[in-house]
Length: 125
Image 1 (cartoon, rainbow, N blue to C red):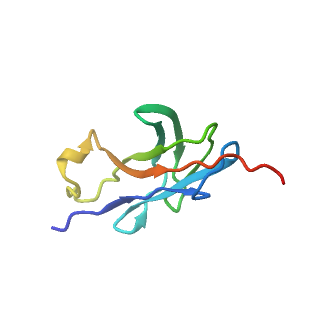
Image 2 (spheres, rainbow, N blue to C red):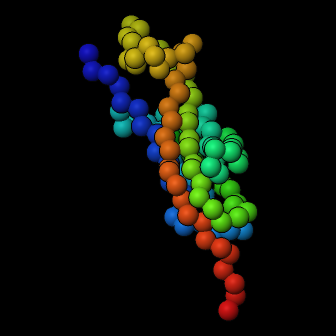
């Protein structure tokens, strides 16, 4: 039996955020390439080891999520996202995920964007 492949992506727009300007952090959640709607997604923003922000949203019918955030100072950040969702039962019930990923029927996936470099706010000139 083939195991299901879950994918959670994350990206930021613009790729080089500017301090004081709102950026979009977004991604997609899929199972075997098919979107997973109505999943709870949390996006964590860390400055070093300190959590700067925790943002929460839900995937749409295309498995896509998006949150907005405004950075207040230029520095390195790590951005991490995780998703929780319930598996819909298959008849007959067939285990499709490793048991170490399942907790009371909820699956949690995570992915990290990595370090981003903040630019200082542009001055009109």
